[in-house]
Image 1 (cartoon, rainbow over the protein chains, first blue to last red):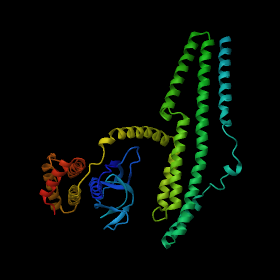
Image 2: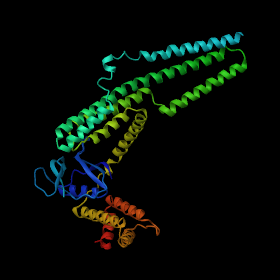
Image 3: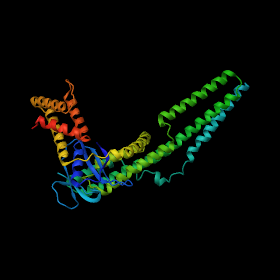
Image 4: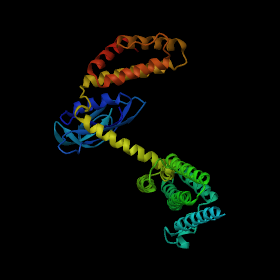
Length: 91
Length: 320
């Protein structure tokens, strides 16, 4: 499950975090998250690399909001079909 | 005697053509100024290199990371200059040598064909004809095996493109990253990549993989509508973490030094896999069982019902 894969842009922050967490447990690590710039797309793209070490769950909050864990990404993505700046934390 | 003279004239004509035409390799570019071709800047002796590396390590050891970065960059740029200088000569050599060899080959072929048509004796005619065919076949085979039928322009163009990409990455990393995140060893790895990017085998692989990438992109575009990551709920994410955690624990126990723990872990692995609908072989090794568990995790990632089944099997195994 490595490479750049499309992710729905209609998910909530919690749903996106759960989706990415689930995919990371398949021996992968999220390295990038962005909007899909393809014409007409309102989705996101997530990039994964191989990772044999098990990683902790991900949490997503609005940019600047506090969260536990370590901030790993601060991308702008589609959340509930609206472009939103978020922070991704590793718990 | 007359036939011998004709053959000799033909051979002389062939050699003349080869010499004149392959001589073109020296007209492929202007003479390089002595200051550029002189090795004053690009030469980097082993002693100098070792001294610089020692200075870099001393700076890192003493915590002077700014000085270490300066030395790292100096080493990297000097090595890069050497690679650049060598590549320029190699590219020119590749272009002229291959073109010269091709021209010589064409001239020889034409000469053999011409000689075949002017000699009267049928035996000699047959020998020349056979030689011409064999020569053509050998040249075609040589071109196919060494250059995979790619033109020099395609190979050079690919080498240049890959080198520019690698070089840009190295220059950016040297400018923006400190020695903690981009130590000399990391720069070295990139420099080795940069060197190999300027070789024919690397270019041939890149050309082939580029075609593969285009095919992959086309396939990805085709499947995009159905290839989105399956959205997951927090509960499903938790199940995935549970399955993966079980895998890690069992792997650790299987590979551990306690034979009892190892045997128990193998038994638990079998129990989970069987309950999840997989049928491990009776004589499956630990590696095979772990591989099957890994496969189960992979399949569960895209299939909610398999995720639920595997999660239930893991929960039933009650791994502590």
